[in-house]
Length: 243
Image (tube, rainbow, N blue to C red):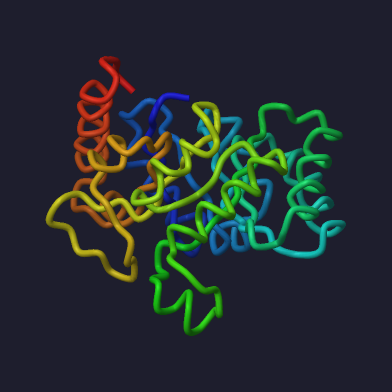
């Protein structure tokens, strides 16, 4: 998959998300992320309609439960026709394998399952002192990514700082999906492990998830195009081809 920009529709209602999409009508069906807040508010039928209108959809539900429950959730999501779905790697190997098996049984071969490694809002202090996991964030991310790959996941969600390691572990077909993207000079807000689009692509990111720098911009379409151009230029620098 070529490196693409995914717009995070982090809104409380479908109406607010639609208002943003209406300001992007000149763009060619951008890829969008629907997270928990918007999915719970708008429901599965609205997500289905996004797909019917030609949008690529990344459903970011971060599933984490016993294997049987997660398998049932994956089966339900597969019917929506979305492109990407997240689950927490910390749920363990059996949970991820159950998710993969449910996806395969559903026949939704286009649905890619992504393992969330560590949230970009966490740093090493939180990891060690609050969650109780020793070592560095990068070491934990790599361990989870290796387990995800062995469990049949299609990629992992990580910060840009870990993308290169993710690709080294998973190989070229294992997606490195990077949130916490901030153009140079932008505030980091509640994110801690952030990176510019150019840096993330240079480190091997396949998909960049961008929210507030686009959704809160005075001109979201212009902000989106600026980031897309930065990604394209970085892709040419990395491999000689547009991403």
